[in-house]
Amino acid sequence: MENSGNWLVKLGVGLLVIYTLGFILFAVTLPRPPALLPHADGIVALTGGDARLDAADKLLENDAARRLLISGVNPGTTKAQLKALAHAGRRFDCCADLGFRATSTHGNADEATAWVRHHGYNSIIVVTANYHMRRSLNEFSADMPGVRLIAYPVDPQGLDLDGWWQDPHALHLLHSEYAKYLASFVITHFRA
Image (tube, rainbow, N blue to C red):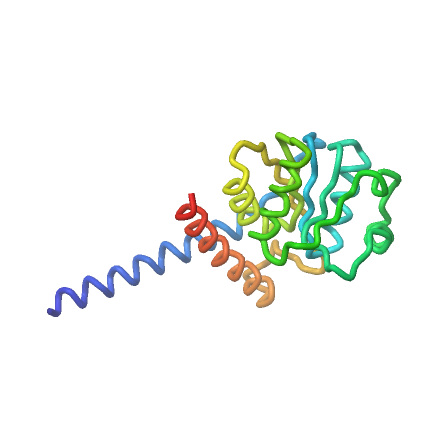
């Protein structure tokens, strides 16, 4: 009986070590935006920060894609309000679509999938925060396996993630996102 107790303790410690090392790897390898301007059929920006919207509009204005979907927009928000918030350019009026249904990353993927299918797109640029990119790509690739996804991560405003281990807020944010990423990874693989 004592040996089985030791085995369980060793297993628990081993899992904790693997989890911790995985978290550290997750935190120190946050994705960075590509050096060159990416090109795709469409752009999908996930709401959650002005930097995301600014980056997505800049991509649209530089002809990185034909259209932009802003997913997860608050139903009370208008296109004119978003345009002013992002100081958006001339293409925003004709080529930006707002998605109001999504309330989660999985919802963003569902909303984007319907938009991609409607337009017949084969590739999209995904714009979200760097810490949120892995989970977003996991959800998106599970919903649209034949679509090429190009990550365009942005740094969150007002938060320095380079020194995450020294900032309790950054540490909490990254740990929360890591746990959600692992859960998403498991769920999407069981859904498939």
